[in-house]
Length: 166
Image 1 (cartoon, rainbow, N blue to C red):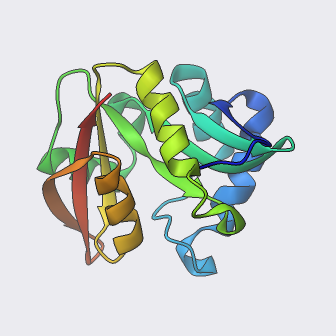
Image 2 (image 1 turned 90 degrees about the horizontal axis):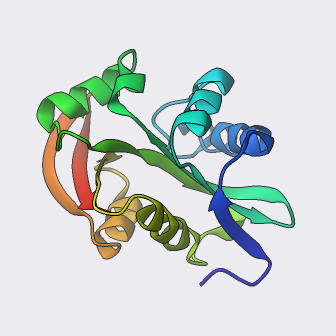
């Protein structure tokens, strides 16, 4: 479980730089598993529109869980491909990406952020994709109660689509 000096809560504009730094450090070309890079303006728009969850240790963002409305993803081909394979319910939202700083993994931060999101979005469906070559993420999300509902290929990479109800 997270240690006492970690705060889990909704992201604010003050967290934007921390989210961007953590996102950059976890891109594929740097050895991470994030499939896309969102711009500052995209993340700022997401913060204003939906609950985004962060974990902060001594004020520094050490993990984030982003969410977005389907309408905000029209220009993201990978999200369009996911939604073509599985559109979800009428009020479903996009879950992810989720990212935990390498030094913080294994401390329950992903589960704690997910629990906070479910508290804020009761009864709503979240839909996400995970690369099939990322078994740690697939296992972690399955343990959190998410279930695989479909799959799709994008850019030559197979992805699983998972769903959950908040």
